[in-house]
Image (cartoon, rainbow, N blue to C red; front, side, top):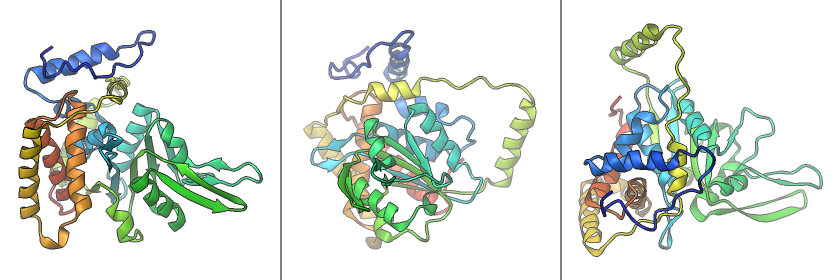
Amino acid sequence: MNDKINDSRLYRSPKLPNDETPKIVQAVEKHINSGGDAVSYWTPHVAPTLYGNTIAKQASLLWASSLDNIGSHRGRINMLQYGEKGSGKSILLEFWTRELECETVSNRSTKASLTVSLNGRNPQPGALARASAKGYLTVDELHEFGHDQRQAMLQAMESGWYHVSGAGYNAKLPSKTRILSACNVIKKFTPEFLDRWDFKIKYHKYPKDELKRIMGTIIDRGTEEVSQHNSGLGRYIYSLRSFIPEMDSDMKKRTKELIDWVIDETPDNELGVRDNLTYYRAIYAVARLNMRNVTEQDVAIGVNICLDVKKTQENKYDF
C-alpha cells in the first residue's frame, strides 16, 4: 500500500466474527493504487437490479460517504430523486436502506412520522431524530408528507436539528443525518425546500433501444436465480466514518480555480452559494471514499458528478 492511501487516521471498524471489512478495504486500495478510484470501483455494486442510471448511483455514493461537517459548514449531502413512476427511484432507495441498515420511512405507512409521534403521554421521536444514530435516513413518497413535516426536514437538513410542538409537547430534537428521498412530483415543494437538496436527480423513462436491451437481459436470465448481492459496500462506508480528509494549500488553490470556472460557466440566474457548496461537499466525499486527503483526481470526480446531476434535469443523461 503506498503513502497516498496509507493514512494512520483511517478508521478500521472493530473486527466482528467473520468480518470481511479488511479484505474489502484491501481490494479497493488495490484498485486505487493501480490508477483507479473508489467511485468507479463501487458504482457497479450500487443497486445492481436498477438498470442504467449511472449518475444517480454515483451521486448516491457521495451521499453515503459525505462528512458530517467541513469546518463550520455542513458536510452532509442530501439527495432528492424525482420523476415518473416506475423509473427506478425506489430501487436505489431500498438498496441503500438495506446496505446501511438505516432508518427509513414512507407515507404509505399510516404510522409514519418524520417529526414526532404523539401517542397520549408517551411521545416518540420521529424518523428524523431516530436516524441520527447511524446518520442516514431514506424517505419514500416524500410528496405525500404534509407541509409541516417537510418544513421540519428543511430545518434538519440545514442545521442538524428541528423543533416540534403540539399536544403539550415541545422539544428541539437532533437530526444530524444524510437524507435520501424519492417522490413522483415536486410541484408542491417550496423553493426554499428544494434549495436545501444538494443533489436533485430527475429520473426519465428508458429510451426504446435501452428498454429493449434491458428486456433482453431479463428474458435471457429467465428463471435463473440471482445470488444475493453482498459486495461489502455498507461495511466499507461505515469503516470510513471517522476519517476526515484534509486539503493542502496547493489543492485549495486548484479547487478554487476549478470552482471559479464553474461559476463563470453558470448562468447568472442559477448562481447561489448553496449550489457551489455542494461541489465542496462532493469533493470531500470523493476523497473520503478514496481513503485519502484531497487530490486533483478527487476534485475532478466530485465536480463532474455534480455537473452530471444537473444534466438529469435537462433531459441530458447517460444510461
